[in-house]
Image (cartoon, rainbow, N blue to C red):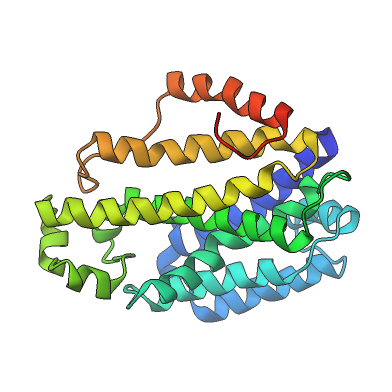
Length: 267
C-alpha cells in the first residue's frame, strides 16, 4: 500500500487493539461498562478533532483523510460490552452479531482506506459485504482455534443449540474431550468459516490494486489456520493451531499473483 494508507491502517489497528485489550488485556478485571462509556466518549472526541492523547491523535489523520464513519468504531465498543456481560451464545444469530461487533467492523473501517478500484463494476454494497464477510471469517477462525483458551476463562463462543444437537455437553468441552462427535461438530464449524472466506474473496479484486496484496495475504494466511486445526485432528483444546513461517512466506507470492491478476477466484 501507499505509505499514507499504511499509516491509516496502522492507526485503525492501534485503536482496535487498544479497544480489545480493555476487556482482554492485563487490566481487564478492572474494566466496567462505565469505563467503556468513557472510551466511547473519547472516540467521539477523536472524530470531532479533540484527541485525548497521542495514540488517539494517531487516528485523527485517518478520520480527516478518508471517509471513515464512526458507527463501526462504536459497534466494536458494543462488542466489548458483550464480552463483559456474555459468556455463552444461544445460537449462530447471536454469535454472528458478536462477530460483527468485534471483527466485521474492522472490514468496514478498512475499505475507505484501502479504496475501491475506479474500474470496478461492483457496487459499494458488494465490496463492503465482502469486507464484512472477511471479518466474520477471521473471528469464526479465532473462535474455533481458541476453544481451549476461552474455556479456561469460562467462555464458550460456540452456538449452544448446535452443541446440544451434536450431543456435546459443557462438561465435555471443559474436559477437552476430542470425541468423534466433537470432530463432526468442528468440521461443520470450519465449513461455515470457509464459506465466509469464500464470500470475502469476491470483494478483494474490487479494491485498489495497491491494496489487494495485503488483503489477499491476510485472507490466505488466516484461512490456513483452519487447515492446521484439521491437521491437529480437531484438538483445539491443548494444541495451538498456527501457521509456520515457511508456509507464511510461501503464501505471499500466491497472494501477490492474485492481487496482480485482479481475480477473486482460486487458481
